[in-house]
Amino acid sequence: MLRAYSILHDHRGASSWSRALFAVGFLLVCLAMPGHLCAEFDTRGWKRFRDIQVNETVPEGLLGVPLDSSVLEKCRPDLGDIQIITSTGSLVPSAVAGTQSDDDAAVQAVRIYKMSKKAGKWTDIWIDKSAKTLSRGVLIETSSRDFVRKVEIRGADNSTESYVVRLDGLIADLVGPVPIRCVSVFHQENNFRYLHVRIIDDDQPPLKLEGIGCHIPESEASHLSSVPVRVVESRQGAGDTILILDLGEKRFPFTKLTVHTPVSQFAKKVVVSAGPSLSSEPWEKIFDGTLFRVRRDESLAENLTIRTKRQTKRYFKMEFSGSDTRSLVIDKVEASGNIPVVVFNYNPGQAYRLYYENPKAELSRDTGGRLSFNPLHVGGTSSAIVLGREQINSEPGRPKEAQEPQEPIPSLIRKGAGVLVLLIGLLLLFSFMLRSVSRRRRTGRTVTRIVSRKV
Image (cartoon, rainbow, N blue to C red; front, side):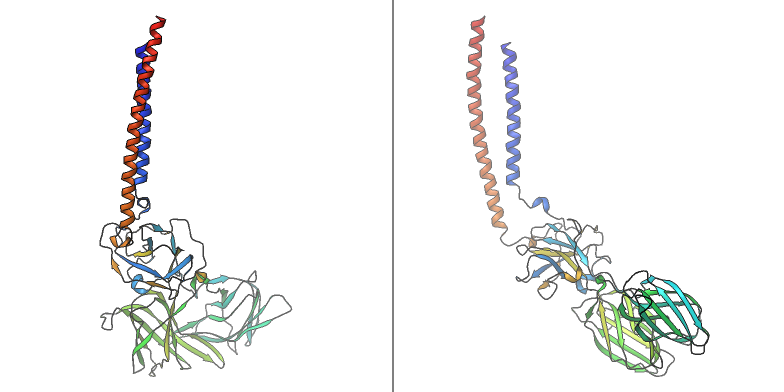
């Protein structure tokens, strides 16, 4: 019986010692482990990075870092490899704004609730947008060919009032060496529910109408910014015009080119090509279409805008041609586009880096849940933020440069504290073992003495 008690007591003691030793060891490991290791982001696969330099006057909150073409031309098309990393290697939740381009073709379906025609005079169409929604133009769907028609547009919210929206609109379909087709009439934005569209026939047969729609306004996310552009070369001859454009070494991308010309009427084929240098051969074609301006008395229809996908190259060549022997005189060319901005919550006490160029990166940018923000209301996207020079991510993990200069000193202190805590823990453990052994011996003698007396 005494033997069984002794064995049971020793087993319970050993179990307690095991639990105590495990707890102390786990505590020591947690104290000695650097705190940032669990949050460190593996940068393997990212080829380049830049320091984000922020003016000290920028407050805490949402920060938008504009991405210029030198960054974008090395990123994936969906910008899924853009990541923000802290100086300690932690991944920062972020999102990219400004990637949506404007679209003139976005059309809202409407209902024609009344139509009337007066032979040789006009065709009246009354449409209902179903609600007071914004619109900026009318699309007239017709299968007719070879026509020019003036268009008047008026708006109303009820059946008793009517307001002029535009009286000098024009739609046209012209055959020829440079064919023209324009069936949209744009106007100032308004939110009239009802629109009255009058197509003036001027003794011509009425058009074969197939439907009508309203162009919706550009969204806030597609707000365009002007991009500086310079004409470095202009050549004219035999009805052709060639322009060479330079967006500069430090530049932002564009999605739209607008031509300004004093010529009252024209129709020209235009081809736009891009290249990294003035001697680019061959140039990469990015657009092939028609620019025109058509007039009928005071009415006007024109298309002077070229839209493309996001362009990041520096040089562009515009070639205008047509059967007309007159060269197209161009006063200037304007470029504009949505400037992509990477947005994250900024802490003034932290340093940040921008990592990019990883074709195989998974789209896991916003690790902290989707950021909610209005791209037009994000602060700090001006000269207060500068991206440092491009650096190559040559190491397999986080580069040594990503650590702040003062990092070695805290690291040594942390390691020294860990060793000190370990030594103290071992001493306390050894002392506790001695006291426990002594207590167990005294208890064993007492139990033996009592059992002997009973016998």
